[in-house]
Length: 64
Image (cartoon, rainbow, N blue to C red; front, top):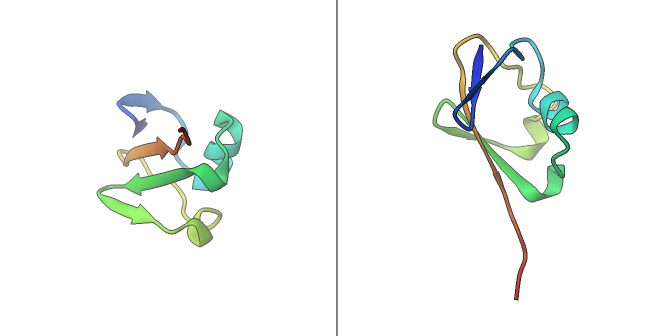
């Protein structure tokens, strides 16, 4: 299991971009932290989740 924003999900083996697309995130409006390190956007497709990874996905929201 991979813990994403506090929820355990069975997504080990999937890439960051695969997960973000499946979950409906806008890739241009999120930041991803994997095991305490920020994942650069250009590495989303090549970064694969492993069992017991801890992930935080933060969405940016504009406002005024």
